[in-house]
Image (cartoon, rainbow, N blue to C red; front, side, top):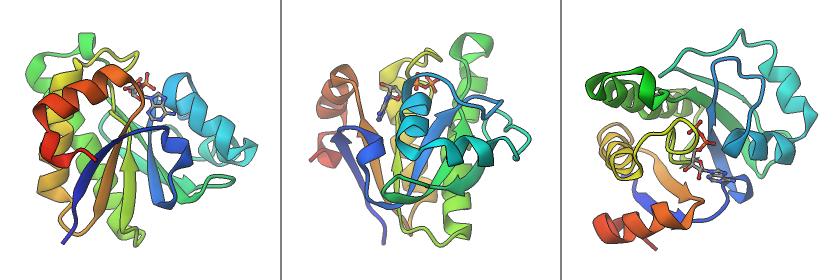
Length: 168
Ligand code: ADP
């Protein structure tokens, strides 16, 4: 039986099977967590990403982890909040977690770390992003040990208020 934990920290430091990257559709690097992952992984990651032909919003693609302590990086693209209706945003964000978990499972990953997808420059309200993350990981991640790694203090503060049972 898998479990979910919420911790505060930097996803690039995660030791385990896979980390999930909140990428953009080009998969050619960006700011935020994407930039941090590419810096920590080294240039091999960008080279492999360039062969993938991009990734649609809500979908997920896997690469090697290169210099990271995780074996794989699963790249998913969250919705840009202001481009969609609330219902569409929710479905697209659920798809990110669901498809990332499916890709993880296909690659025999048992421990997977997630950032709070779309909750940075893509503008998804943090509390809603957190509840979508927790609900969807619970629903589709039964067999996986998932860790939600929150980088900003504000998001971790919300998690401690609303989801204390998952917080370390
Ligand atoms: P998006 O474009 O999907 O909004 P961002 O990278 O801007 O992606 O932000 C997604 C989330 O990742 C934000 O909550 C941000 O605080 C967080 N983040 C940024 N750097 C890191 C990191 N090194 N580890 C974990 N989370 C991070």
